[in-house]
Image (cartoon, rainbow, N blue to C red; front, side, top):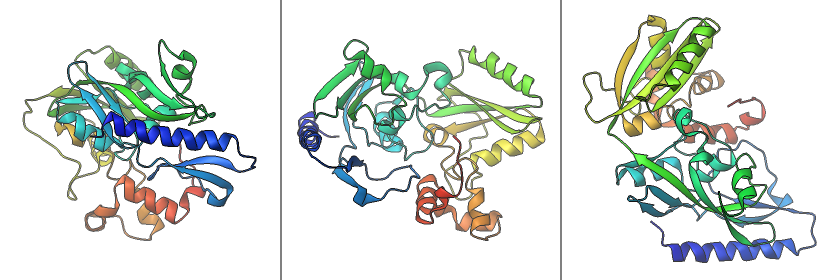
Length: 321
């Protein structure tokens, strides 16, 4: 955990660099080096002036009494969740890829399976510290600088540089009771989703559409007392979560299982939803249990993204999230 004093020292240095850039007579644009990124954009580095903010990736405070965390923008979701779970807490909305950052979730208007209760990730944020284009550091909240506070989501960094985010936390549990409901017609799917949004006993809700006549709605509820059928999705021998959902849909029966909390939150990490399936065909490797087991170290979202950018495949495929 980083001290607030050290954080403030880093922010002052970055603000000074931004202010100096604002006085430069140059056609080059300013960009920030975040470290790892989930972006697939191709960038010519010599066209920009770069400021390194990769060190802004720590927890500054976790307040168990007031249920909030102060975090820097580059902290990844798996690192944040590991920190909050030590206090029996998690963020209200957790992006399902462990490498996604808090700043990326705010600027990118992230939505996940608890969003039916809490909204977008930015809706769970109480306050931002942000450096503007002139190098001035300001606070933004529902009271102070409201235009920035409500405008930052979906701005992709164009309003300023996020340097500190205050986010809400909720009590967690050791497991998530997950129930799969196969559906046939789109109307049935939407009616079930609408019904479940009113179900106060669930904490998570999502749906997967396989084709116009085949979908599945999945609910999740916190529990510390799992019954039988505890499943994980992190081991090489485990099914990908998408494969489990597809298998249940084919069986066309309601199915229930209990998933450890971190396994549930990052259930799509292995296989990157279903996108990992394309890696086998692109590499001309048979897609079977043996190849999936052997290639498991490369089938997580971080490694798949590294391959996507290294091979420049991201410029050939359109990924719609």
